[in-house]
Amino acid sequence: MNETKNSQNRPHQPLLTRAATAERLSDAPGSLITLLADSDTTGGALTVNSARFEKGAAGAPVHFHTRATEFFFVLDGSLQVLVGEEVLTLTKGDFLAVPPHTPHAFAPALDSTAEVLVGFTPGMDRFDYYRLLGRVHDGEATVQDIKDSSEQYDNHYAESRVWRERNADV
Image (cartoon, rainbow, N blue to C red):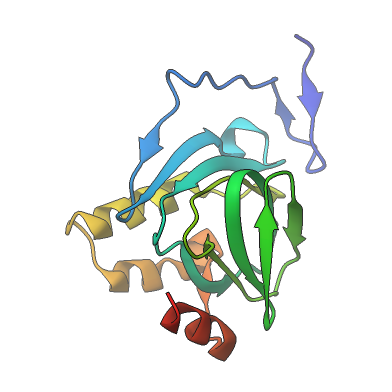
């Protein structure tokens, strides 16, 4: 395979992640994240994972990124996504790109599961962030560890009345 270069002009090779060997993490009840490509394996071009949410799973709280666009492609089921102060319902085949500095959150729609391809461009080191979430879930790290990592992982938490009201209905 030919060597390719990304927009940051760092060389990288084509990347293949086999389903059988992909790392899988459960960071909360009802959710499973499959790690596909992190920025260190794509020359910084992108980061990609898939996420499977069972009915009632918490999903991701309101947050924003300062350096990357986060995108969602719904593979199956139905996903609710907060974008700014609007809650959108995405279904199989829908695609959404959320630009930097835009508060957003996501979870499976009420009475639904969701399977989603999630990505970031440019890439950012996310896999260790997902692993940290798993350690918090397992009692090996604290919520303060997540707060302390906000700059490192470009994950900044925010508040939303609209999302809080949506979750009150769950």
